[in-house]
Image (cartoon, rainbow over the protein chains, first blue to last red):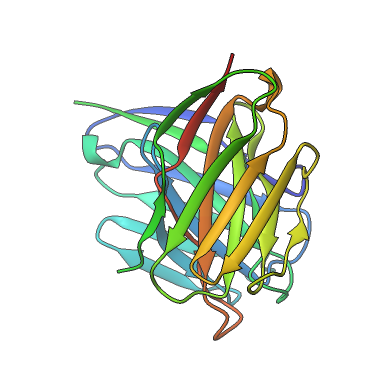
Length: 112
Length: 114
């Protein structure tokens, strides 16, 4: 969706390296959801951000939402092969029915 | 844990056939969604439903219809399958108890139309 841009489209990192994925919205975000998808499978919910400046962490994954609530980043520390997959951000632009607009996804490969 | 089950992981059908994709969730969620996912196009919403017998068109409803006769089940119907409907189809559900409820996804159905 042009309303939501993810970068980079793909990423190859060496195991142990840190990485960051970005998600930028053309409109103010009411909520921002991060998902991970293993190849050929469904999406797994990681975390949700709603407040400007909010930051959440789960194990080695940290997500942040900027103060203006138009950009989010997902940071992985000390990447492992298990982190490989497609990361998608989903934007909630209003509070009507939990509707989400998804970014194009970032394909992450981690080399052992 | 929320469980969203799609009836088939892989499906092969022929052009012109009527195709049914079934999705069942076990968490009493009011909202259910059908998406298709294509390389370079991301996830696109086909239809969604807020309640039993309620349905709303998403971004790309052409060529599809849906049915929600029971709360736990949301079916996607391809009335007359065409090759451009070859895709990965994903079903999701979410709660209505608050404004920030994540969507929970099934494992997907990879549909090929020959």
